[in-house]
Length: 39
Image (tube, helix red, strand yellow):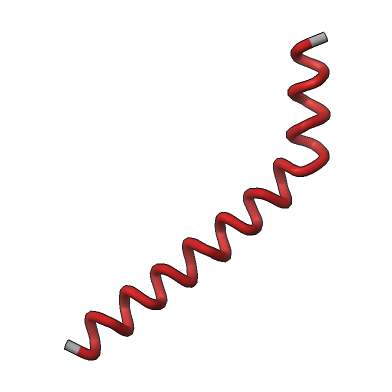
């Protein structure tokens, strides 16, 4: 039962969460790069 609950959780919004995390990571990386270039 726990495994099924976990699987449904990952299937429902696990991908969405990963997408947001990936976008946030890319934004931070871009910000970091531009900040270093500005110095």
